[in-house]
Amino acid sequence: MKILFISSGNASSGISSIVKKQGESLIKSGVDLEFFTIKGKGLFSYLKHIFILHKHLKNNIYDLVHAHYSYSAYVASLAGCKPLVVSLMGSDMVSGLLGKLLIDLFSFLSWNKVIVKSLSMLKTSGLKRALIIPNGVDIDTIETLEKDSHIFKELSSIKAHNKTILFASDPERISKNFNLAQKSIAKINCDLRVVYNKLHEEIINEIIQADVLLLTSLWEGSPNIVKEAMACNCPVVATDVGDVCWLFGDEPGHFLTSFDPQDVADKIKQALQFSEKYGRTNGRQRIIKLGLDADTVANKIIGVYQEVLEKRKIGRRGKVKE
Image (cartoon, rainbow, N blue to C red):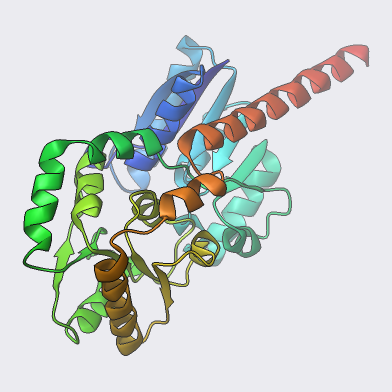
């Protein structure tokens, strides 16, 4: 099975860590996979890549194409990618009426299967046949980084002095609601550490060293940073967006908050108290129990590919009989 992954290539490391990690998990599971990135921002860059991708498809043969984010999926559709699986990631669902109409149109005309990341995304999209498959977490990488001796030395020295609240998102992105984080931290005596645009392993190291991860987003699909924090057994305070409530369940050390700064501050205090009393959470076991480790998610996605290819094969047989 040869698969082409299509996504934006504008992250600091080229491909976004979420897409890259999912691709790597599929490769680990035996899938022959290549990446095609759309570089450059704005409408012109996406239009230009329709022709670049079309030429690429003429020179390369794939069993199936998997596009991530709606704009990449539009490029894939117009370039003639068949069969085509599309993953909508979260921000796709807040692009206004035009964005919803485009998703409806393309999903009807040329997307063989659509994957969304949470139940809330499914309801927002209105796509009745979409599948819910959240992105997985690379547990192996996290466990390897935790065993690195210098990390634990840093951890012990940092925690002896300051309590660190980690905000691991771009504060300039409106959806991440950094203003709420600032207002909340101003009410308590602790440090807010802002980290973004770093390599994935560096972000994981930051989570390992943090006392609490804070997410104040206005909307999310299935926030990977929350799942990664849980997999690091780090206490989490998060607004009730995407599938966060489902992720937390009743597991101690995870705190849902409203968008009120005082409520966020109170939940941070509770998370810090939990951290002082118990250290870390059992979030990793919760992630594994939910089947959100990278290997389990990879197997689910492979199942989607096999279903699409089997239906395509049956369809071709039917046409031959006619």
